[in-house]
Image 1: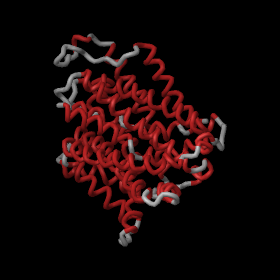
Image 2: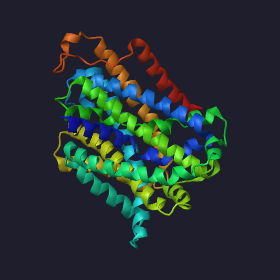
Image 3: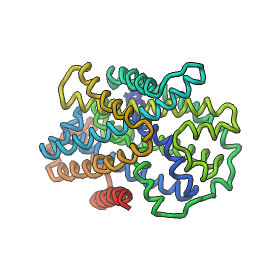
Image 4: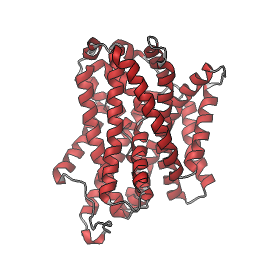
Length: 391
């Protein structure tokens, strides 16, 4: 059970770690160290609380359910249709972004060993091969994710060992923009970078024998890992490159090349680290979409595999150079799915008699803390994220 909970926390972390590793330095560097850090902490806290609300709804709805069934049991058929539409749009956008980013990295890595493939071939190969692992089930994703995460930790350590000694304090304090409006506009990309909420129903099912407290701690610890990694990565990148350089990069290859100019090992290390971050994130999001399709359409695994991967792959091939744009669209959808929908589910369930719900082995019925005040702040958090897109 402890290994399953650890593996599940790493799936939470791995799902978040991915596109954010590429996008965060490019969108926050222009605002300097202090404001970049504060914005990151703000988005993390709002996202984690929203995830705990979804955990409460998932547990009270009965566990062992996909988002499709949870929505039907709590919000009715109308809420189910809206939730499914938002969830599919979000997961497809996220998978598109990960396939686009991974295709760029795979092409670069294969070129380094003398194998030249087109971007389209790299994207197709990545999506279809990684999809086989997802189709094998949550246990397979868990075991592979643990191994990948261990390698990622080693790569992050090597990256920091290489970059930290050459950090320039002037670069960290430099801010090419003092516009708070522009800072607020980064919210959707940052929010998407903590987009692990989609895996919670799958992990509640996977850890059916865990106590509610263990599930809560799994989510909190899993969300803290990407926060720490993002902050270290942000500081290392900002300390070695100027704000003007960072905002000019169009893709991860340019960022890695610039950081590797003064560090001979950094090109390989960062390529491996970023590739693993994308892969773990892809696995988590794809697992959520696969389970959602299995729950909604009740088809065999082969048909579910096709339903899960063909549409995102097609979208990625058509939008091969729109990495950050796709993340921005996903951020808007995620606000409704990860903040407002869990809030509506939880409000509906809290209006019912607690005796109608099953307690865990310790006799405890889980409830996200904070009461009405926390719920109100979560609502304002969602409104803030939406307003950031309309400015």
